[in-house]
Length: 222
Image 1: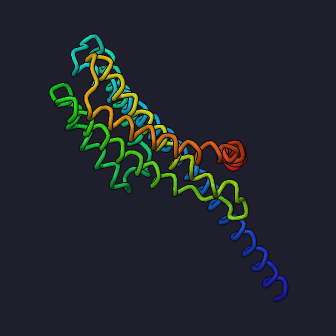
Image 2 (image 1 turned 180 degrees about the vertical axis):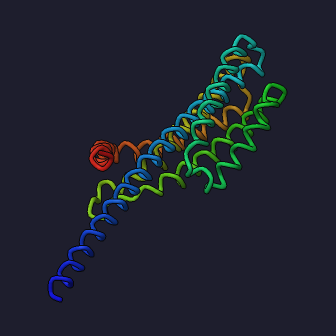
């Protein structure tokens, strides 16, 4: 009888160990999938910002960038295909919202007015920035690692800073292409410069977190 009970206890410990091993493996797989999706979204954001700037110059008369715009759209489609292969996208409503908006903008961007193009691109990128935050929040770090818990600035403040810089670049390039600056352009650039200056302090003061975060992510992934 004692031998049977001992055997059952050993079996129980074995089963618990197997379950913990499976759970740990699933957590690592989800972690890697999340990191991959975050990287894809960040690349799409970067290409969308470039598409906004080049579209602005195209609409001001610089048709030489048409080929580059086509290449950017092709690369975005490849990234969308990669993202759709990751299961996490099926649960993200903002991903579907982005796809719907991008399909419409992709087909009409060359016929819009410069202000409307800027507005539509910026709205699209805003959706992507929120999506980036939503997806990145799936990453579960150890609560004891405070430096990593504070690394949210990598998918919040830092991408937003880059977006403000991208907006300023789009306005500046369009202004340079048409050879004149309107009062609206000046006000917009002034606003963006103020935002960039304010957010730069926040982002660069937290720069040390990046190294700690990368080290922790590397350790957890392997």
